Every structure is written in C-alpha cells, then in structure tokens.
Amino acid sequence: MVLIQQLLILSLLAAAIMAQCPAPADLKLNSVCARMFEDSSYYNDKSCGGSYLDAKNGDDFPFMPLGWGNRISSMVVATRCEIRVWSTAAKLGNNRLFSTGTYYQLRDYAQGLFGDWNNAISSYYCKCN
Ligand SMILES: [Ca+2]
Image 1: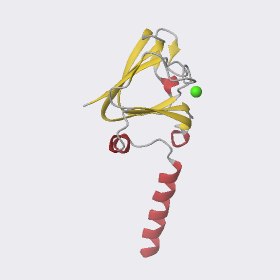
Image 2 (image 1 turned 120 degrees about the vertical axis):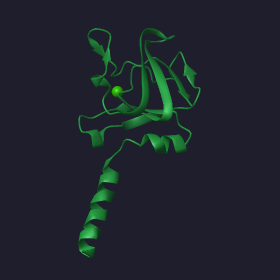
Image 3 (image 1 turned 90 degrees about the horizontal axis):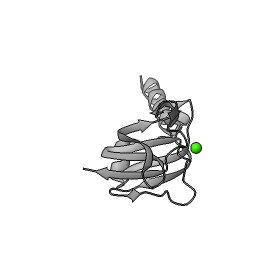
C-alpha cells in the first residue's frame, strides 16, 4: 500500500515537472495577468516553451515590447483576467479576447477567414478583476 502511494506521488511529481504551462491560479498569485510564450507544441505538456513575456494588470501595449512582435505561440491567462490582442500594431487588424485559461497552441484559434493567432499578436491590453 505504501509502495503504491509512493509510486502515485512520484508519478504526480513527474507530471508536475513535465507540465510547462503555469496554472492560471499560480499566475494570479504572482500578479501576472497573462504569460505569453514564444513556442508551442502539439504535446500539451511540452507547450509554453522558450522565452516568455508577462503582461501585468492594466498593461496596454499598442506596440509590442522590442522583439516580441509576431512571436507569441502559446499563452496562459490568469484567473479573473482577460487579454485582448490585435493582429497589427497600433491595435489594428483583427482582434480577439482571450479569457482565463491555457492556450496551448495559438494556431488553433482562428483569426479572420484563413489565419490563426500563431506568431500574430502585435498589440495587447490585459486586465484583471
Ligand atoms: Ca513563436
């Protein structure tokens, strides 16, 4: 019985280590509105890779921080927060609101008729309640 419990704990630990995307509640605890990652993966537990950019509550960026334009591929939005993103700088082009949750692959989210949101975010506004 003890052995089974230990194995269970070990496998839970392994799962926690493998899962790269932070939990929306953990971001909230750290005063992050949304965490945006440069990479994604078709394996959910390998998504949220590469460098990341944190948006704080109230962050309003019509122009992306240097080097971040058209680069974000996965994202986690904190509990009771939401982020609106635009496909063109200066809040032009298409826009979409992402509410609390984990977005493993932004390529899965349609933008306009034929596009998606992978490597497409060019402006953002993040806010929490
Ligand atoms: Ca990318």
